[in-house]
Image 1 (cartoon, one colour):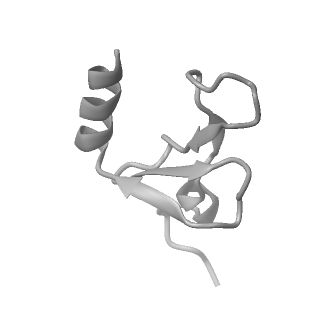
Image 2 (cartoon, rainbow, N blue to C red):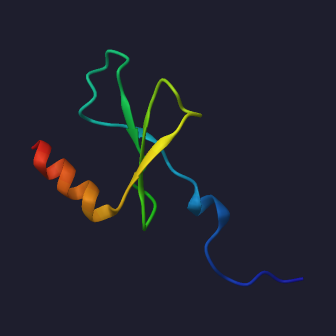
Length: 67
């Protein structure tokens, strides 16, 4: 059986990274900006806990406002 071309399941997994704005004191925010339609954000101390989900435009506006 051949597979149809498309998006691999691993491409739909968040690639979490620590925010560059985190101070390194253990109070870190992780963000996954590799997904095309959503930007999930979570507390690094609770990696299996809930995540907030932002649209790319809302996330960009938020980060721009912080600057």
